[in-house]
Length: 210
Image (cartoon, rainbow, N blue to C red; front, side, top):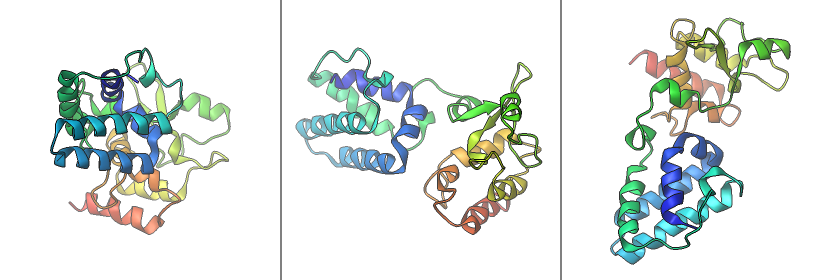
């Protein structure tokens, strides 16, 4: 694998790729970054950079765009120094590297469908409390984490969205769901069904109360 190419592609498409990695993959990625910070030699740093490419190769589909045109197998020392800079930058905040992204751009990297398409499928994108992201062209994008398999809005999502006043600031509410939370150590939307509803509600209350 071409380490330089893969790292560049990872940094450029961070939100999409880390979404695919899932919670365990992101934990492993953070471990590699921590190891890089304490590395004592260029050989050790190079080994960590290659470990990162192996992690991506293990967890991402083989035809993922990150691996496109990766025709060079090894990075030279100059590239490894650049990898050090890039990997250290990957510290949990995608806004710190690559082309600066607005909150709206970051939010729309996550799974969504148009409100019109959801209505046709029998979902309820217009229910009070469901986040609808109104776009410049007049359409509305609706994040899909808010629904169960039948298309019914999840009760905990509606309750949290009410606390976050999503009806007044849907983009702000969506940003809360998709950003790593200081209380929860993960993006809240990934914890739906994995942790208690009360914990998600408490985290939302903590934000609203400052």
